[in-house]
Image (tube, rainbow, N blue to C red):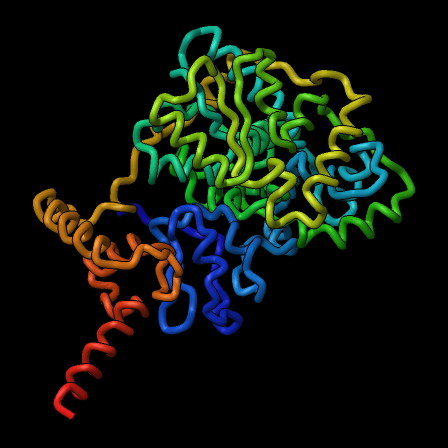
Length: 424
């Protein structure tokens, strides 16, 4: 079984055992045990949905503190395009980028720059007929992880092209080394992230053994300091090298539109994503060449580590794009190879497998079906599992009992009572 780093963690002292996260987790990765939520590591995709819905703030995401950048001689910020949608009345990206310099970074490489390169690389790979259609974007790591553990038939359709975050890190490192000759280990590259899935991707990348990014700092964490620095700027440096294509990646549909075609589909919100993946796997969706999927509603601007309402941020991004050139970055075909994944995406069967032995697994599955049929089918969550079928699975795995179902327990108690009182 693969071991994954997870950025989403539980604060047990804040958890009261309510079922909000239990019912909303898209991969049924949460159970309530001993009155506290418990996250099943092998199923968690770090989408952050549990953080979004927890009324007690008992879920949070790890991210690097700003002070961590001081471990490196050259400190590089690679801001997600979603960052630009967090500020009211922003009309110049350079204000944000200069603000990042003023809070301690030495060099800025916009992820939106890399997004334009990834869009062009995708178009080139399509032209060369090197991708399986329908092509599923690999930009959202939560979606990639979801496919890896739940949709084995679609693994070959995921585009084996690095996400803009990784491309930005690689390009920034190369530029700095060429300009200064500094050793690569002295360069610290930090992604300004809107979501926990990106934090996880840095520590446990799907595409390679190691990420080119050193750490991720949450937008919500850096926002107060950055806003204060932006308000005090005396001079704004001309740092931006992004066009509307790259900045548009911040919102749902931005990547798909950059394909410059009309046979595309874009969906956002984890529940909608799952519905699309199910229909793709069943071949109910046809005549689509490219599929963009974002786990967060509205796209990256809807990440749980942002500060602004996603739809307000989305509107701001659209306003910013109005006066931008289409694209300021163009692909050198010699760079295409370094933008490809090192590892092939493969199905992680261990996440839902009942046993490594096929005969034992079949026997457990037969038992699971029998137990599931005996349960009331209410999916109330009172047992600590999200559905009756999930409880049946927990029972055959030895992690629960049938009497965890309050309805079966009530019936058992009633039977005992009837037996005790029948002779009176």
